[in-house]
Image (cartoon, rainbow, N blue to C red; front, side, top):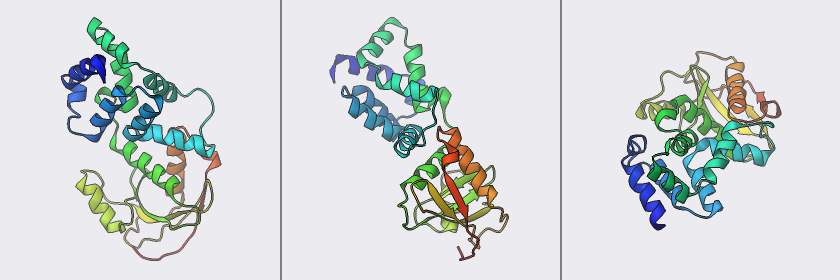
Length: 233
């Protein structure tokens, strides 16, 4: 790893924003990213550390990446090209504010810490695009503020408990199943009998498309079809 990496790691361990991540997977990925010399290894670590970067790469693969200037995408490229030796030199000169600010901005910790709803929605969109076209759908719950949540094969009641365990959640407004029917097409219902607060299909569709756009995707290329049915929890 070399002397430069050792100097950077030593500094980071005593730097409050990074020290607050101690013991987390994110901290390990950050250190591994800075230790790597090969671009492909750095990219893998960034994919593991940042759900937004994974989303941008997903949109790119599906032809959904929004065209035009994307500040976050440009910052990711800067981070991937940041040489550890240059970071070590900046720290030695006491000029580390800019590169460390870049690290916080791209990996969303410290002063750029991510609100929980962003984490939930990015995770939901990634799970959505991981579904097999024509395959089994996934259960979801709709929470106030247009936040959607899924947790694998868990029931809607189990999803409520899962979010509560994470210190998040509340009372869902609706729930159902969503399935992938094509490359960028999805069919959803609001069929869960566990939640009856709303049966408005737009309460699911509108925020999902808005979050796709807000995370760098072309929402007008994603098709969401509603199916009215009631099948239980």
